[in-house]
Image (tube, rainbow, N blue to C red):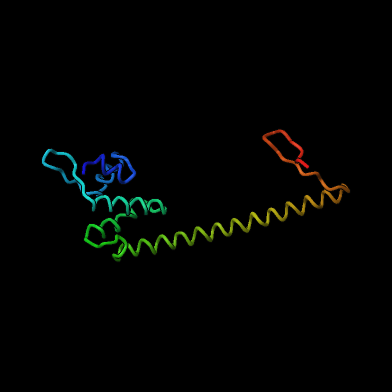
Length: 144
């Protein structure tokens, strides 16, 4: 198949395919008339790259998976180098999750402090403040 058809079937652009080719991720084979020629294996390579990128892998992180497929393995993630990339990505995700948990805890503490402060202000004034909704610089009373 030619580059346009491969791009269409892979859900990408010919420009992207040329970029992958320049990075050594997609083989550059030419037919007799000089056009780039691709097969179903190339489509599988692209599907693997796109899936990994959808998961947040960088383009260079996909290289071991591509090389595994090119080495004849039916799945691109069964080679030792691919497994190592998975392990690194999982560690990176675990770190990110921990940072998000810490931020969530801080936001929860800020909310509790703010609610407590609001309650204290209402008690000092002797009335509960009416709920308000702020839109831009305009204050609008809440319905009800």
